[in-house]
Image (cartoon, rainbow, N blue to C red; front, top):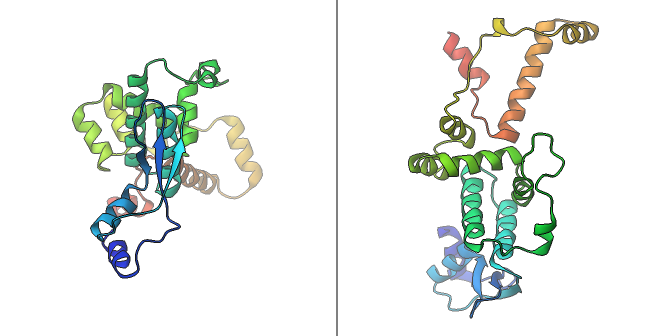
Length: 231
């Protein structure tokens, strides 16, 4: 912010960078829904006016979802950002009660998901560019977690997955590699590939760990850390 503010002092505000104001039924004046950082930088630079765009929405939740979608594309989809957006969204939904759009009311409770996860979590994941599992875990934390756990996730001190396991009191179980048994068909498939079965298993585990880090937000230990612990 300091760098951008200094640049604004020198060259002024770039007029193509319009902030977005939202307007929906019940408001007398539009409110800022996207561009808070740019506004703060302009104020700090002493700029009295910045260009803006007014967008009309059918209701507040539609405006909030628009802002969430824009933010999720602009900023890293880290656990703390996703958690705060879900918290804000669900608070507005609770305040709005049943005043939802007809399209949303007509959607089924489930969307063909075998586990029965809600269509609401599915839609939220699409808005945030995240995955449904992370949304459901965040909502479980918000519902049953302590204020201390909430703050830890929101401040980036705890991952969603770790907080979720604390809430449901189900710590991650670390197993020795010798405890893992492969099914016969898996062993047969690995033998067909040739080479060492152990090498195939190691490669598969590495891929799976990276997938967990990327898709589910698991805080897993690096291979270097594990090797150092062995030494």
